[in-house]
Image (cartoon, rainbow, N blue to C red; front, top):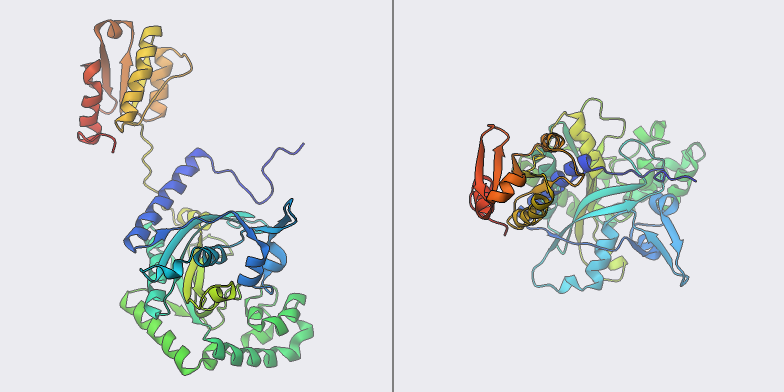
Length: 429
């Protein structure tokens, strides 16, 4: 019997989970500053949503989705990415009718992709993302990119590279598609099987191929920037000017196309340049997807967003030797020796917790010396000692573990005293 976690999945143990909580709380605080609201969508969706929303020609839909049939014969898929689910929720719940537009959303989601597991790339992955629906203003594109960069910078990352490109509007893409087909057609038989199919389905995806990236035809492929019409070129220039105003450094890469069919106009990736980070340097990627909401049955609604892998973010922090400031100290540890003191301690621990004081106690029946060692391991700020003598006098010995000072405190004044020392008199709110 195989009782290990399935390949491509991993347990997040308590010590690591504190890092995840720290990162997530920091990102939530930044989203609040940028006035984004959280959305949560189901873990699985109807398969057709991803086929239509992400695109039949993408690797995600063709090779990586976890798809199953339920007992009612419906085809369902564990979500492989977040944008299609958010767009579906936007349409189904008629968020396009909200008074406040655009709708600015963020999420933390688990995604599922059947791909070869490697460091920082799992079959069950955790992603933070944002989506803005209802605005076609390049200023909101700049805001979304700025938000992503702010998350990384405020968590301590410095070795970052932002790469941007324009995929143009529909007219620009049609012209570029024809140029790519003409360029790659003479080399069709030299390309991988996937790219031979992409040549007619979505030739832009050839530029994103890992297998053929060294093929000579890649370096001579036409640039999308040469096929932008005036409107698309103006849009891209405005985006670049906004990023410059925001002091967001960037590079333009005409070959950046992203791996999903729904992108147009802005596309971007953020990469780590930290030494030893690994071969796959991408931390986050996203872009504009005007037309996606319409494709899944909603009104014509422009949108832009990105996805950021939490596992890869933590890897980048480790590569740059960034220590997260985790508060791993316990406020108070209760040591009770004797049956009556133990019963009293159970009630006092509850009272302390109710008043916002993080408290724990021994549940192993250990001797006082072993309980003190446990308090040290928990890095307790205060140790509260209640033995038979203290119980008779209805007092608790309170030991400050930093100074070594010890005071007798009346049981009925214990909570208030610790609130003053730990919370400045503020209780649980």
